[in-house]
Length: 146
Length: 106
Image 1 (cartoon, chains in turn orange, yellow):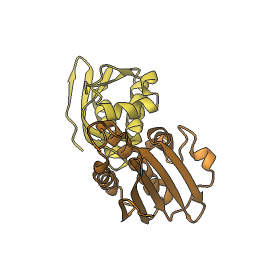
Image 2 (image 1 turned 180 degrees about the vertical axis):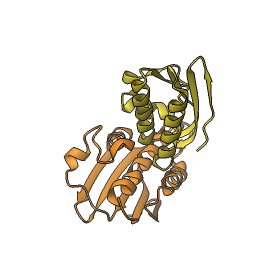
Image 3 (image 1 turned 45 degrees about the vertical axis):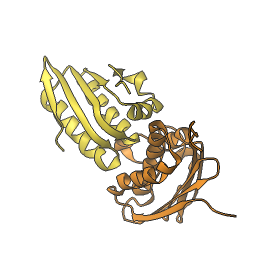
Image 4 (image 1 turned 120 degrees about the vertical axis):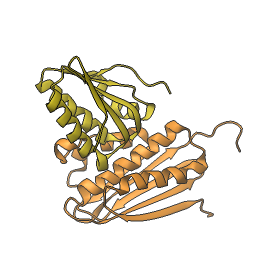
């Protein structure tokens, strides 16, 4: 099977990398010719996923964050954000809107936003091993382009 | 963090700028709180005109300012919100708990 375009990034869980991660994905996604709205949705979802690694996966240390992006057939952007951090004990609870273990500074809306801004969203986690977020976003093909 | 603000008739307007994410949110939150504490306004307006990007960290910034204004029995208003931050704020139902003065034209 001939794979389409892809990229992989790895960086430490420093908050300065949040902006870098979403900008890198936005540049990669540009080849799908997204609208500003679509690009905004993708950037927001990436920002949420990477922030979760920084705030929750590695609360007291730095650890690797792995970001993979692929272009799938039919103009679909496929994204994986992975960490080797502490994992999530209760996924059901983590997915509840407004629930957070991050205190007053966090809104608890990260996962809800990823779910609603992306076409597909999967979350898997093993306590003590790490968490993987897998999401897809279909970019609508616009007229005038093949 | 420096944020431009002005006060008139106990109304404090604060212009937010740049990208609001977890990396920048704490400083923005602290700056907004400090300004509210110094000026004790009756109305506080957060202006989003120059916000280029915002994720859910921005929701926490708004909620933080809202709690502060509630303590002062004042009002919080949001204005000039570009499309991307607006979508994030709407996902959290912010328009139900605070007033949005005007949305920025696209």
